Image 1 (cartoon, protein in one colour):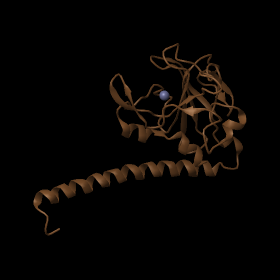
Image 2 (cartoon, protein in one colour):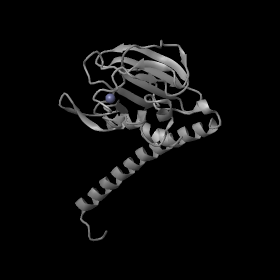
Image 3 (spheres, protein in one colour):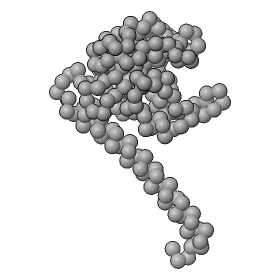
Image 4 (cartoon, protein in one colour):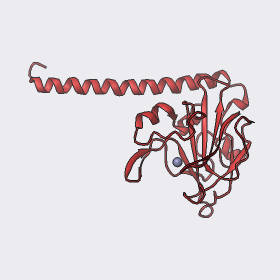
Length: 218
Ligand SMILES: [Zn+2]
């Protein structure tokens, strides 16, 4: 350290602070995931306490180690993409099924991922139909969001069971390719069903869990 000039020392201090801030963010995220895991563990003996994927056959939906069947994730959690020229970060999974043919997912059924209460069901600008289910039987509460669907079968206030069909895969009224946008959130999406942090990666990390990790820790 004795060989460093003032500018180099200042630079080291700034870099050390940045590392500490990054660590804080990581620690908070680990704590969230751990508390989810503990919450799940407390309910572990109850089969309906587990989450399934929202698409696929019953066997495919129950698998936690990978996406259901031939469904793919077209836009992953926290993945950067361009929205009208601006870099934004995706909050969840875009489920697509193009096997055995393109758009095999069109009109396929979409299911409640777990037992819960529908806290939003209705169309939003850009999104098309959005369904939000609150799963409040453990701590912290998890909200799941299913977007761009068609033939919506549930209303706000309605209780649903894991595997109940809630809508079909849609294309947001022709504005998007056929797919299901699916989120696992720890912020109240019932109050803000159209929540979209956009360019704010930190808000994505603070409010949304990676659905793939979330399934693996159950
Ligand atoms: Zn999406």
